[in-house]
Image 1 (cartoon, one colour):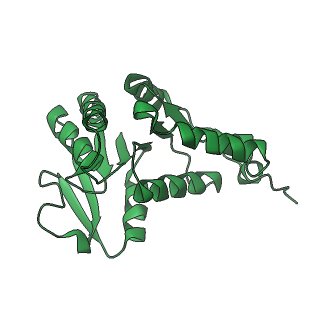
Image 2: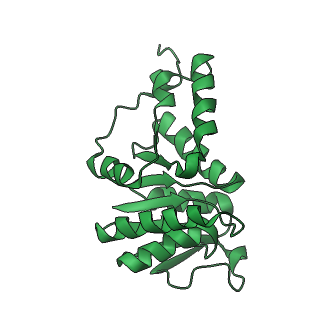
Length: 194
């Protein structure tokens, strides 16, 4: 399976996040999975790539051409695809991936996560979306989604599109046993079909 991992590019984070992401990626590689990601050498992107390399998996890095700066991109990618824009980058990663994992990150990670959730809600794909909740990082995300569902801003089905895991092994087991759910955009968006 080609697994897309979204995550922080910053190295200014606690090492525990880096270690957990690298270990998760190494386990994925040892189980025969490959990585599709943003091509970065730093932060949790770099950790995911290093773990995949340690585990013997293949790595497809996807980056906008303006990232061609010394030290920004991981130098052991099996394949490196350059795009014109960040939007094109997200589209290539979505097309290449069979599943998605969001590890902790900032604005870019949130953007990628919310876009892939929106596409699933609209019935544009039916791939598994997971969140690795390292050190409780995504606890506030869970609360935000619950608030949106409870307030009627999104359906319960939409609120269940991303599966959140505190344990990496449980996350991997979910991905490997995933059965596509029926994604009816009318139900997801609470829109009545005519």
